[in-house]
Image (cartoon, rainbow, N blue to C red; front, top):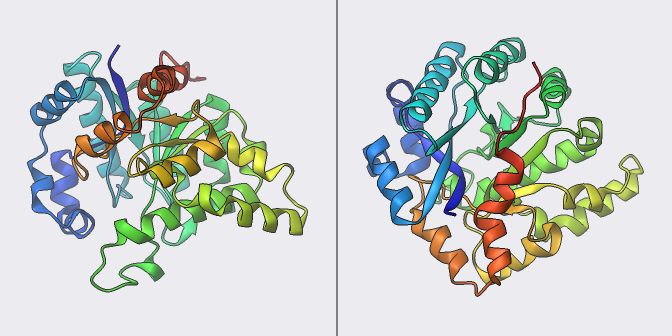
Amino acid sequence: MGWVDVHHHVLPPPFVAAQRDEILYYARDPAVFDWSPARALEQLDAFGIDIAYTSLGVPGASDPGLARACNEYAADLARDHPGRFGTFASLPLPDVDASLAELAYALGELGADGVALLSNYGGRHLGDGLFAPLFEELDRRGAVVHVHPIAPPAWRGLLPGYPDPFIEFPFDTTRAVTSLLYAGAFTRWPRISFIFSHGAGAVPMLAQRIVALAQMTGNVADPLGQLARLHADAVTTTSRPAFAAAMELLGPQRILFGSDYPYVPVAATAEGLRGLGLQTGTLDAIGHGNALALLDQRPHAE
């Protein structure tokens, strides 16, 4: 079968209208606004991708009304093109109460396949206790959670002239993973399936340091084992050193194909993976098998 894309951005008109300047700050290329369902389908067909699970790009939708409009757009897209698009719903964090309401609507009424979270909200990373009620509900539902990085306010534009996505994004994914690990989130809410963007950022390379600190504090049981049970998409992780690090930590069953389209060309990851000389079984697992195990007809508790 064709591949499954778990990191595919959608740009609903309400999102573009409300966040155009912020979208362009991160994309740095106005061509991103050329996104359309037709162009997305052309890319899927060109690279042998059966289905793409869509999510908003940065900066997300913190306004409840905007999150609702974007989720309904994504649901309509999936309904209009059966079998080609799934949806990771947006939540209006850091408003936890509004996010719980939107979660119930998106999963219960719209049939979303999971949720998309950012690595931090206003500088508060996902292990912050503020978000605990949301994770309780996500765990109850056995939800899939795709985590995308965004620069914290204090780190935004830290290296002038160097766009945040290139350097800062992998490190903020690492902060998010570390904050969740040290908060005990991965053991407290074991039914959540986390997928972290871009090969889990710098986690594979920094795992030894993250684990060492966890062992020094003595507050985290089996920290390396917890990290090894996470999932990551392969976007910008197809150089041999980066891919080797991700494989060493996560193994071939926890890496999934993602494109990051339209912010990144689909070819970058699709051709990158195919050029690594992987065994057929490994490439099939990354291309579609691992995603299907997480997402195909996954039930959500009412």
